Each structure stands twice: as C-alpha cells, then as structure tokens.
Image (cartoon, rainbow, N blue to C red; front, side, top):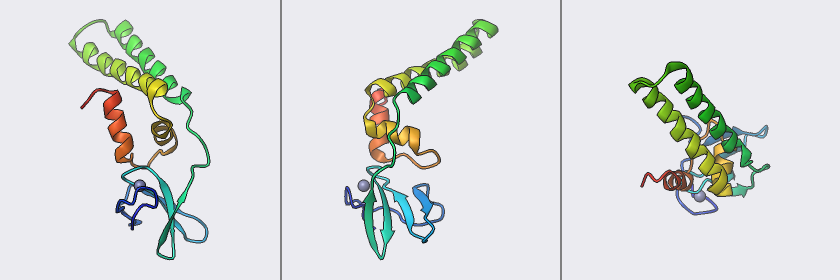
Length: 137
Ligand SMILES: [Zn+2]
C-alpha cells in the first residue's frame, strides 16, 4: 500500500508493525507512514489521509529539557564530580539541550510526532530532522 501523501510504499501489516495505530469500531485500520509521518486509514484497498486531531505543543519538549537539566544538576550536586557522574550527568545535559533545541527550532511536524505519537515509530523525515538538530550527521 502506498502512502496517499508521499506515495512511498508503506507497511500495512497489523502485527509486528510499530506504524500500525489500531482500528476503529468498524474495523478500519489506521497507520502512520514510515517515510513522511502522514496518518492514514485503509478502506476497500484505498488509503485515505487523515489530519491529526490536535497539535503538539512546543512547551512539552522544552519542559522535558528543563527537567533533564534538573536531573543532571541533582546528580552533580549529590554525587560530586567523578567519572561516573560526568558520564551520567553529561547524558542528561545532552538530552536536555537536545529537547530544548527541538522545542525552539523543531518543525511542527517533528513536535507533533514527538509529543503525540507515543508508542508509534518515528517517520524517516522526523528522524532525519532530529539528527540534524542534534548535529549527528
Ligand atoms: Zn508518506
């Protein structure tokens, strides 16, 4: 089945598929495109795009970022400076800064996928943007 938004072939298995969202009461299955993150349902062999009912909020990743900074601060405060606290605290500092950057500069699409799609895989588009923001490529 091809995504109605980007036309890439996308998996519409209902088992072992992290892009399967579930079915409605009429048994119509809902999926997320692995490529572009578009949401769609399949009815009589045709895929139809649906829009997200809500928008992701930028303060959500920013709040996570602040919490991660607090965790890092707490680790340094209570466990002093040694190699372990630098590694663990450093990871939290990195995660915090990453979340804040996403909250400020991330696209609405990335924010939507990160805040609304819990339990569902990220699309390739969102993963690429995430890597760019974190300068991992
Ligand atoms: Zn798509």
